[in-house]
Length: 125
Image (cartoon, rainbow, N blue to C red; front, side, top):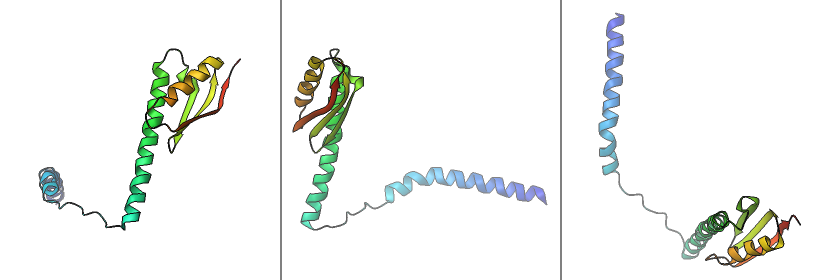
């Protein structure tokens, strides 16, 4: 009696696994496209603006940080970078006033940066 149940279980699991492997692409190909929810024009623009701001702020932060890390004149690891609506905030400790000024200048050159706040970027001198 045990043998038929064990045999049935193995057969059922094998059939299920093969079925999923073979049905996956077929089900994906036959799935209808999801239609977006319709929003009022103002809601759509606000949502797109917020999403665009978030993406550009993230991009700006990444670009500023990578610029700092690529510049041998800056201690990029010691400078924290945050961006909110195009305003870059720098914080941390750098070796000299010249390095602080260079960090501000480099951050200001990045596309999309509206202003740079470096009040929290201190010098070790």
